[in-house]
Length: 209
Image (cartoon, rainbow, N blue to C red; front, top):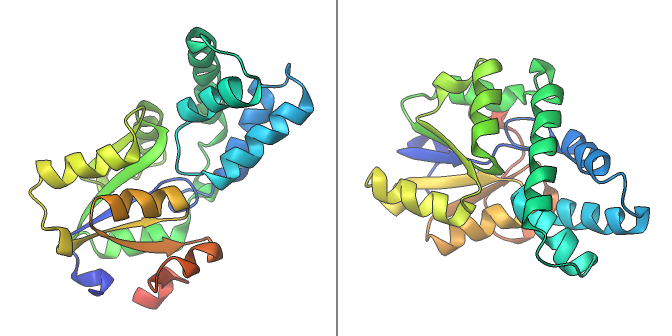
């Protein structure tokens, strides 16, 4: 596999890779779903943790359709997603949550085109990146409701990237799937379970200093 520094572009997941946000997002799901039975909320949290790369829209739909067996809940799902976004904008604006070894790597290697492709809401991501002072590090910042697989596909087409010259760095099985289905390399980070998926795992970005 091509060396990371020899890439023309790197696609980055956001939660758990650039920002240590997963515990806060889990807390957010518990808060917006606090009026529902605890056993059902815990099932959603389990699904959330196993599918970190999926959007909140998918997760709320899963909660109602598969856990509660309720349908035609689109308006309720959208309302919960809005409440969730308000919480995240308030809770994630903390520079201490930035994963600094990643930010430092990006700053040292801006000759490589950097993109964010995340399961988190796109407008929320751009708000967070702007207020955390990292927006200028990225050529584009893209998120849900567009699925990550489609985001990656669109970026490859828009910038005419050669697939062998790019890679996706993420911390979930959904990131691996988005890379694999688009025919690009995947590098796991911040989740040791991903080591079993392929040989390319980043233990620390300090190795690339």
